[in-house]
Length: 264
Image (cartoon, rainbow, N blue to C red; front, side, top):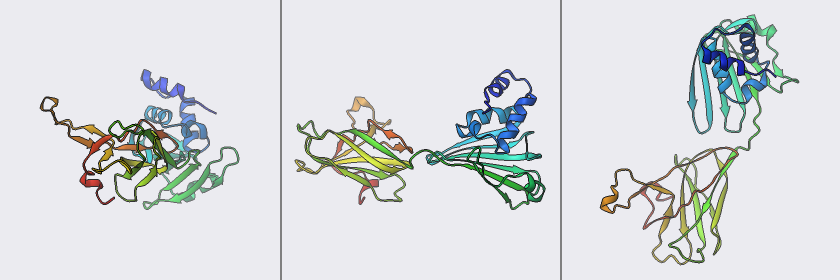
């Protein structure tokens, strides 16, 4: 497999893109080189910038996209107008390459279907403006869900009472995911959470006559310590596929849930 270390050095030195480096970029955009872009965006962004492309990254919880326009690369014997590399939540990659020609001109050169060498699925489509768009897809190797874990406490009681710990989606598009702990259990794990942002809460189901709630929070920035202010704001937890987000301790006690979580 080709490597793009040379391209990064070229970019840093400000020299022109070499013929071999340009050829390597062309191979990636022609869906011939899986390793160079399936590992990440950094190498591809460096090589594309060195080839005259203007690139931007769009970061999201469920995807990471690198979009590049302009430049001098070619794919399937045709100049490349623009391309986008998207990493999905499960680790899969989709490389979309828009060419400066219609599909009829490149169809004989595009190996549609699944490549036995790279495992990529290649397909040719037509954009609304009539230009050819080639999409290369690599399957993901990550589980689609992540986990949240932490340590529980309730007013320093020993043993820690049984608790209900919940992860509530910030966007409120789905119901909370909860686990029940047993008396004396200090650690919890909430598994199989779809990628996204969550609020974490805990409620002691025993020895809790005042019905206090625990939340994962951070102090409010506009609350001066000199005034003795103890106001807290809910702290979002970002869950990523295949990862365990640890040290999430919902132990800040409140007399009732914040308004955004009531009824959930």
